[in-house]
Image (cartoon, rainbow, N blue to C red; front, side):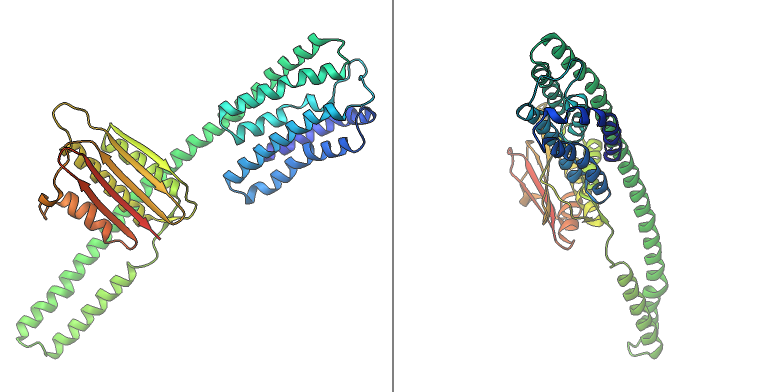
Length: 378
């Protein structure tokens, strides 16, 4: 879209050259040079910087261009001299308002973009009145309404394109998450098969050899034990590599999808930002712990027919990721939870606390609901 804006700007420049020459004597010296540079030069810089810029930076640049464009248009009023303009001639800045409303649609929320469009179009009316010397107010109003109509078409197209792009991104991310999960399941199955074979072929065989030999210093047993230890060490080193990294957007989408699958009464809130990647193993563990906490809440938190409110808060920062799962259910006494309860002890506390940099805690009291906190810090 940045490239299209730059190409469209060049097209407008080609169509406006005649007006620039004709109106040069009607504005203050050097104003037109600055205005032309700002309106027609900045989109070229923006398009050149686009491949190396983040989406956030691009939005900021598009928003800045829209504001600069509006300032240039309004600044024509104090720069106007030797008026009025000849009949049938309009200030060249008012004929290309769409060059600012489309970047506004890219940079800001739709409501703000539509407000900017209306304001940018309505300001044309007083400019046309000043340019014509106040001879025909109705024509200026008609031109402003026409500008709103034309710019609305381009703005709507930009908003729809951005929305479609977001939907494609979400679908692509969901496909990637599904593929990652499938690959992870396959890899785990292969690792488990490898480990089972190793345990059967080496570990148990070594134990039986030692028992059969009757002596721990048997040379054959020592050789077999050393080989078994070496293979176990090699397996450990192979699975202790650097984990795959994912962007926080994938964590957000994974959490959102998993929450919807676990409960139909869960609220999901996201605060903060994080640009640094997150290990996929950490993200998977946090998502699974969140789902397990929600499942426990669905099964145990209900009291009578009173609906239970469940909230998942994800807080992102450059240094850490924190997830809090809260419900206002009947709660429980954490001290009375049996040690063999896999849901809390293993799936949540045990698994998360065993990961490097991760932490988990459960807080609950009878009648006061439950709060589960899981997170990870670099």
